[in-house]
Image (cartoon, rainbow, N blue to C red; front, side):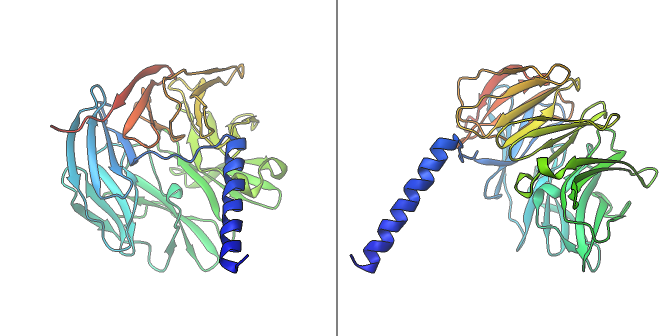
Length: 343
């Protein structure tokens, strides 16, 4: 057998093993065709970009009719961060700073400079806005020091830098519903630490340890979410969902493969969707631990959840399409809405 044939045979064998592994794990890598998804403030529209970040679309959440489309041209080496909570703008980062794009025109309104001498994180999930979009929190590094800067998205003013010195890299970050608190996690020798910082009082107020044997490095959380009543914090890991009670400091886990999750509108439940093939959206009662699945006609959903500003709607994009499952704020199925092109 020639070297070329040997290489082809080895490649086929690796491909077959990989395919069998995915089949055994039940995982699906199908992705939606949309990105930067957001509800309009009154939930009448879903606004999103294509995955390439070259077009913004606004769709009616009742009919699926396309209401508006606009092309956007990103600056050189720019990366979209996310839409603002009001649905009117997009944020992007580039070497020049944080830029604000108007969703209606696709034009850049302003560019906010990066803190001088600091290097911005490359991880998009760590660039997090507060609940009204007036602030964005981003970890920056300078030498071996990490600082979380909270930057006003209108003026570019740095509101309150959190100097974390030589800690491990930030793993997740999020604001409370009232915009007063900022929580973040980072790894220590004993485990993952969850910190809560009061932006008004400019001081840390809580720290909760998530033991290391339960949270290995491969299980990093990308979702950090306060409950609407502010009493609990949700973290979504690779193999579980964890909810920390801020008063008791107790942490409860639900073993779920690669899931995204949000709190229900009344803070009593969590709603999650796993990326495992054949999985349905699921509601968990936090008091009893009881689960029930939300039966939908299709299982081909992504596992990313978007909750509206008022917590009354949740959108789950369908894999490989521009359609969405809509749930109400308590996890009940509302409808499936499918994008209808303009005639």
